[in-house]
Length: 420
Image 1 (tube, rainbow, N blue to C red):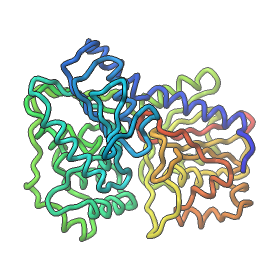
Image 2 (image 1 turned 90 degrees about the vertical axis):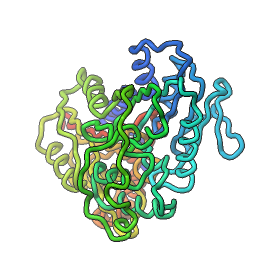
Image 3 (image 1 turned 90 degrees about the horizontal axis):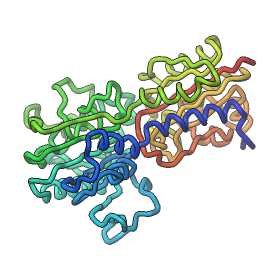
């Protein structure tokens, strides 16, 4: 286990923290509501769904006093101040109108279906005169669901597990989720009525498309063909045309309050006083190709801090080990920058989690590959088994942040110092 971080590693982690602070849901929502002149308003209800839901709700409570509020987030993402009551409902003592539920992520289960039913009951129980503030962030695709007829929690879990390990991009994954849902693709609006709806969104998808964020709870996507799918998923999809999205109400407003670009700009500002900063296009597609792009820049590119971001994909084996796409990417880069001095690379999820693990990602250097092998791991075999987590833990390279209050995809930071 590594005893201490080197100064370059400490610098990269500091820049990552600065980027996270810029996309924290609490100040982002607070500033958006204040800019709209809603301070002190009381004729609102608030629905907050996603991995950043608690922070976003806190931002709303800083500005307005809602009549009712429902929060749905990932298990373990509620702060200590929440008090668990009967049937798994959490309360805030200082805000008795607020209820919270925890649900499953990244694979839905019965708690996700319960959250979907609670969401519908919450919306249907609101007075028609009450405006609705929706605070939506990534993760909601798994956390809250009301599936189409013939699909249950077990089938949803099997479908989601296949989708996550397929290597498909988030647009294709959410395209399938929308077809299987009575809430997504704008269908949540069936339960909203004619009230005013303001949606503030934290984007974890390319191009910040509201119809892709959380599979489009508030926004339908244009028709598009589905990706290649196995027969067991095709058999559960309703026939095309049976799940037409509803028309958006005239008084619906949507605003993106945080995204990957905001995080990247914050990282650039934080680093610019110390090193040259080089911004690169976000990374998608196969993680191994992304690793080679990153390593090429860290080997042969200019000195300074290099910024990427995005969500490279990992096609999982039948029985994957422990890890996530950021750990997989970091381990691959570690092998490609082996024994090169002055290089550091960090890959981490801005939500504080990486796949099904409780860490955000990893930070590696030119020394990491040798340390991992000395701990008994073969890099190629570990990557093939999608078992990067234990190897990186052995080298002291894992990055753990806990819940961050945000979710704007992944950040990738590479440092090449002048001594390289």
